[in-house]
Length: 125
Image (tube, rainbow, N blue to C red; front, top):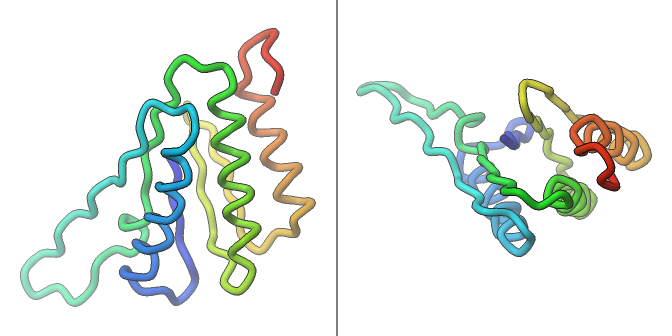
């Protein structure tokens, strides 16, 4: 699961960012990328939980390179978000990677480590 957020962003902005990332992820070897629906606000509520708007569920399938491709797309996408630099929460099998306010080098190293932990034996990370 990928969860995007941006400091002081409204739900519409987070949904827009999430949509852009989803489009890019659909172009690689994954089975599916589903935007998780935000729960409806109860009657009289004034706000939607922005975090729920930015959630994507990525089905990797059986490709050994799928996780590496997902990470490459996400890293590239984050690199293009220079003005706002959204925060990212990536979760796989209970392992969580959170990226926020990091340098490009820190992001690269964090993603490499994450992929290494989840690479199947004998498959290149």
